Image (cartoon, rainbow, N blue to C red):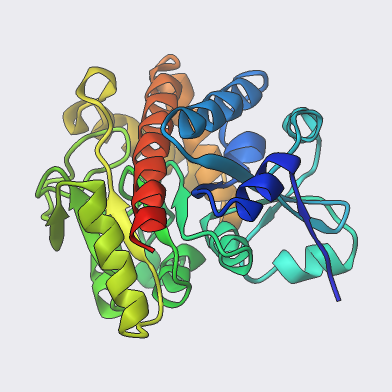
Length: 303
């Protein structure tokens, strides 16, 4: 019915039963401008390798699901125009129609699970948007975490979201939310959200054991690991709060909705922070790649 295209590096890793870390592609097409997007993607892949795992950037190219991208494919995706933003609802349709699309957290989790990859590093997950009690704008990432058995390493939920409601929905869905090395749930650009993480683990080995125990108990769904951005790159909540509020007000005034909200807000916050948000974004993604590689290595050893 469909074929999976594995990069040569991922194919070799699968044959050797080496640890693999899945990486999303919307950060390339919708998260950063060119050339920072392709430069960051290559840095993230290199960081995964440096910490003992193989990176598998996931995307749909001309209808084919790619688990790992060759260098020329990564470059082409970075400059491509009108790339679809794929979640659970449109992944299959894009493939069926021969389209090209970048995977969100949800779609990357689906593809990783199909490929037998247990760990995925991203920037921040989607969640409950501000005003969701009226708009019902809740990311499919949350439901995906509840049903697809992949451990996701993120710097918490994106700070533009309603983080208290996001945590409430995750609790309702039975998703383990783990604070890595701290008891406070991180808030993307900021190390702390002021909200407690339901669980705390301080080592990659502990997270790997919890992943394995969920599989042993036949529990559906994955784990969310909140990995705080390094202190040197953090932007405080106090600094960000009025900037986020301004960007959200502008999005509302301009009628931005649906999948367009997050890219609009991230771009506007980049402008209002004079580029600082992008530097922090890059730092946190690299930090998540390091931890994800360590967790993947522990899962491989424990298995």
